[in-house]
Image (cartoon, rainbow, N blue to C red; front, side, top):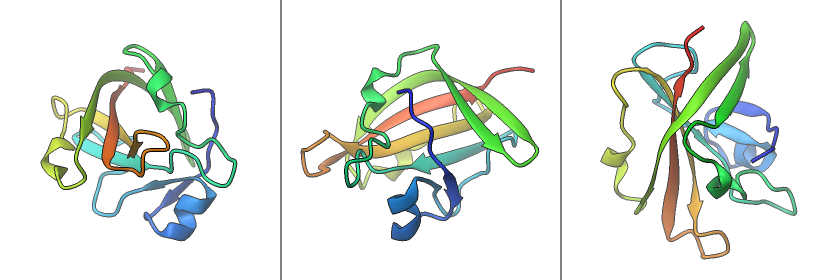
Length: 123
């Protein structure tokens, strides 16, 4: 996607206006057996945010910088779901995982959600 976004804890509208946000009641990056769900608008007020999310392919790397270090995740899978299908936001093999979440399609009134599952690359 070639985008750098600030990452906020808590998915308030204010946070989503400024960048990406970790959804409440999900894991935090860097913890094994957690799924950190990171949401962002597909685009907001001319800023790209997750606009190009569909350009990600299996094997691509996602970097998440937390205070202690930079974590690297490898894209493993994709899925398009309806907003109410929350059970589809799942763990992949109990790994340290992130799931990117945004509306789909872009400019389609956000009828669906686009998910990108990624697991942490071994050190």
